[in-house]
Amino acid sequence: MAKDIKDCKHNCLEKQKMKKEWSRNWEKSKQPRKQRKYRFNAPLHVKQKFMSSHLSKDLKIKYNARSLILRKGDTVKILRGNFKGESGKVDRINIKDEKVYISGITIDKKDGTKVNRPIHPSNLTIIEANMDDKERKKIIKRKESK
Image 1: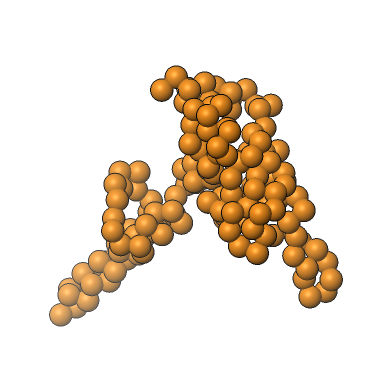
Image 2 (image 1 turned 60 degrees about the vertical axis):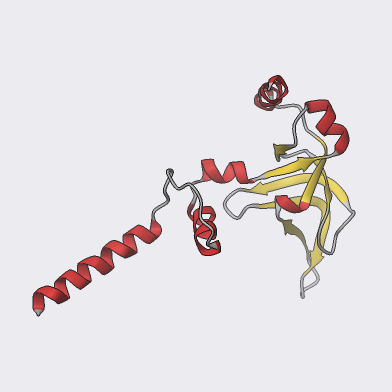
């Protein structure tokens, strides 16, 4: 009986360890909880890829791509939520929380201070891409050649 208890404890500890791990080999799942777990536990170099937004119609034709990873300095338009239709420049990107902060998009706190409102990149469209970065130019060239 004592051996069974030890085995149970050992199995429970293994399951707890497995919950924290992120698998690079994970393919897909129909279960939303597993999809959320994959995104939540992903390392930052993978979460960076989740920070992409669709391009506007003009930029799709220009760059021959559907979407790009957001960068600081991009001009974006908000498609969903209370600020729908408004546009502004990307001030800050929080990869860990998968949120984007846009200049001019603020909310008032109870004490009267204004704070930038975090927005998910899926709710944005890139209107103007910041092309100062050499790496981004390489990415666009690679996408154009496909």
